[in-house]
Length: 428
Image (cartoon, rainbow, N blue to C red):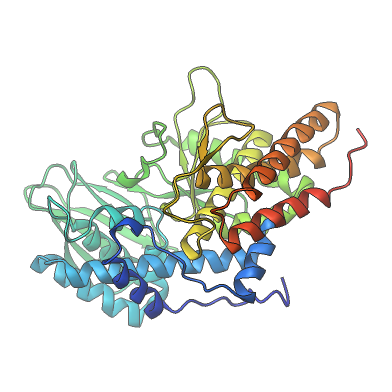
């Protein structure tokens, strides 16, 4: 929004690198810490988000910070780990491309599962980290940049996966494969296996017998990665689907487009944040009993897991998970409560007491769901609105009494309550 202070948000990666370096002496704070200092800028960000939808600028600021945090983790890993020669060459290529083709590298840094991999592959872990993904990241950046390059890439389960681009089916190759890139395309050659050659058409690889391209779905202006390939995507607590057929991809395209239309008609304020904050959807296997399924992982960049549902239901699920994406990013930039505190609180939507982070996530997600129901006509919508609004009000009151909320946490919870109080009563 114009004049919000969030236009053209920027992040200083060097500052975040210093944060990551300082985390080495803070093993209990592996997720990060307070990146933004208390003050007007942070207050403005929290007030913006507490309104429910959040502006595109605020969400983009959070996404930029997440990207910079990933970059810092990547630098730290490369500097601290003993990179094998093929991976060291790939790292050098990635650094070169970061200067010559920064947009291609940025697309790689925004891949949903990179941060998850980085956090689980630290140099001091035992066994030592598998650094092959770093080479695959460099290979994908070279393909996006359309540059001439030749590098080693790993083969896992008979497949070379280039994050965000697709997978080359090579067959078993314990020694990995060679990726040769030109402006016209690329070739993957694994020892003892037939080459996989892929042409580069209109900035995306074309499908072939041994090439499984990444696909996208959704309406124009919000085309998200429909990730059914990346081995890191299975992190949501629900089983993921395998490779989708063309008909399934078309169904997802229609489902996401319908959800977008529903939101455009009923709650258009959420669309800018959805566009900025959700860039990948992982298809989940449907619940055998027909229950709705959706999930996010705090360390997965701008991604949600969804099972099949109708367009209107998908709209609700997307908004629910968008709130988790946003609040997870907030936890990267500031503490809303004392991170050493193990207090649990009772919330209306769960039988078991919840830790403060879980309670805050529920508060924010249910605020948005209440907002959606208050905009829909009919007695069912009215009843749902009343229920969710009561849940949020009760949770906000409970959290406000929690002594371990920080100044920022108290401000955020108060802002949520102010949003509730500003909604006019329903007439139906």
